[in-house]
Image 1 (tube, rainbow, N blue to C red):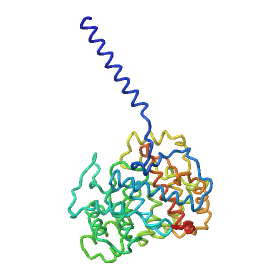
Image 2 (cartoon, rainbow, N blue to C red):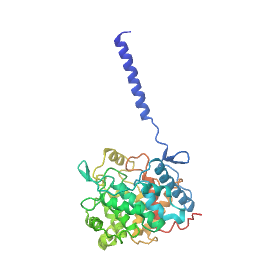
Image 3 (cartoon, rainbow, N blue to C red):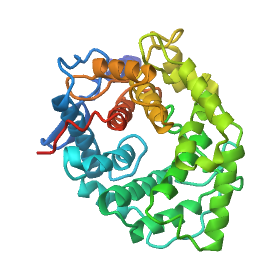
Image 4 (cartoon, one colour):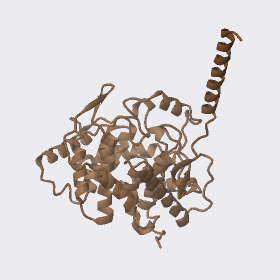
Length: 389
């Protein structure tokens, strides 16, 4: 065998190896679980064809609560980080439902407390492709909001870690008073600066006594800047515009009646014939964030209903929340049609399916949608039939 034959043989084997690796990568199975912690918690990846519940009611609502619990506990055990798609919604919403579903997880709360900096220090502003922001801003917002809601709903008093977290939060406030969103995250949770800043406003109003008792002149000035931004900041899209309804709920002095009425009219006009709403009706794709990646653009424009988006669980539930926070009665036809849609769309696992508009793999927006659906039912008095016993 000459040197050429040896070389060609080796090259052939190398090519075959590369082809085998590529084939393996292409046929690599999709992850089996959305949340997994050892053998004790295994939550399947959500799919559109997951069967719907046969009967909506207390039993199916308890399944939804278990899904929320399993997801948050798994995330703390396996990832140990605060985020906007699992532990954040858990702490901000689940803490209000102790009567119906028992105590919220002390394990998740401990993880949040442990993530608060021991010492609050100035944070240096940075930039990503010309977009100025402070590092870990949405992390700090969700941590502060989760701790504030825990204090509000569980202990009834402001804790030192929550107070420290809020001080750390305001070290990340931008010059215009906003908390700037950076890095791509779930549409719409969180994409616009207004949405993230609204969550910060919710945190300072939820933390028991924090805002009323605030004496620190520097923090008072920063709160004033936040309020000014929320009052006057130009909306990025229709989602920002309807968020004025939630701002009016937390800080009513910031939203004139005419602006509130316009937001309510806009929200109502976007309800579908089937009773639901879709988040994709509230913004052009490029207006969600300062930068939309090709991956997200291809995902969203490639969905089967891209040309005419169907109702989704997150926006349908959130619309109910906005209506109820605007004092629209639960008996209102808009609310009742949406609740009918949500009852019909709950799945056997207890969750509400929604296709992720970020990566389209683990569909964490399903977790967010489930938390919002439960909040919608809570605000309409439909969790009252559930007992923790």
